[in-house]
Length: 120
Image 1 (cartoon, rainbow, N blue to C red):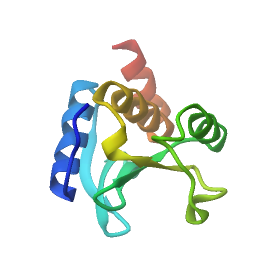
Image 2: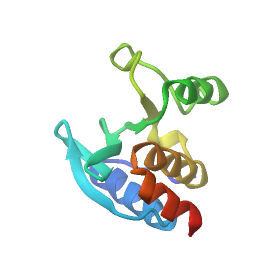
Image 3: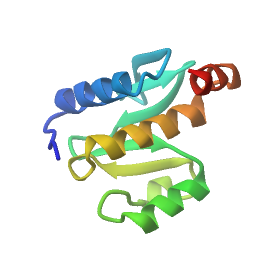
């Protein structure tokens, strides 16, 4: 499992894994002043700090993942009731990260983009 240190290394890792997942129309951007990947102007993952990324996922899915892997996914008071899942970047392997980036991308992408991605 790769361990990223520093915001730049985390950003590079997110971009690399998103590219490996062949996610279309990913924009390297920022979200509330932190580095993020967006689709259609909507952040699907952002970097909170050098230990934590935040994935955009439906609340019910977020709760499932926290229960499934509390060493990777967690909740903080700031994110209660929001479709945002704090994730320990050093604890998540690239394969798992790829699944989560796809899931977060699908949550934020337009229906047209999702259909095109699913067909590909």
